[in-house]
Length: 265
Image (tube, rainbow, N blue to C red; front, side, top):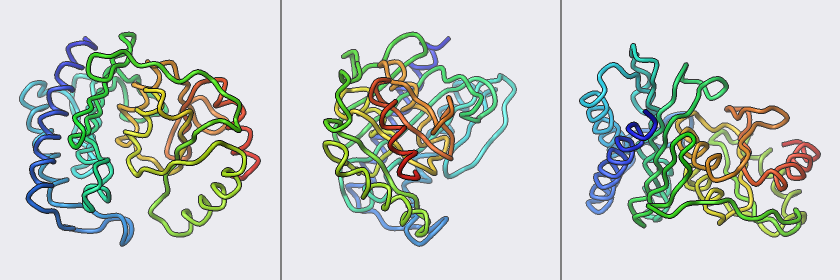
């Protein structure tokens, strides 16, 4: 089943990404704000999610869908599609070519603390890079198998992160980064969680962490990273959640997690 679901997820992610790219070329404006003035949504976000929902409903009408813009719709199959129509909306708004369509398929309740991810696709239309994985089937960049980077000492680790929309939380996260910078090779903050997690899978980053991620931010990326050999977890717990997401080679995640705890992450 996972391979069949992946085939559909790949096709939907690419079609949705092509629509997002077309709308980007036409010009993008903010349609609304959500949790804060910097948490924006564009008309393209909504249109792309509508396309994704229509394709899923047409192919698998009994499945549930959890989308960033349209919320949750129920199903009877026990399968839920977890969708971020445009991850990295601020990058998308500014024309920065680092945004993605993220499509995950999970079994069980649509909660990362309990679900079992079956398939996932993360597509960056600006570069044409398509990251995919199915449970037990490995992770791929198009057709190239992915593997996490070999472990390095923490002081040689390239670590990525992101920041919340809430200003008080951003201030706390900034303080953690200030403490982290002198202890690692460097920090990256690219602005698209799904692509950052996929970059861990591809060996482009040694680790990635962030607070306040939603299920659609990491649903596909987490499976891609795991299938590439990464450990994906929360801070001090086995499962990631909105409280904390951490991914990387197990031998890098261990000392990084200790340091993040020390810094009050």
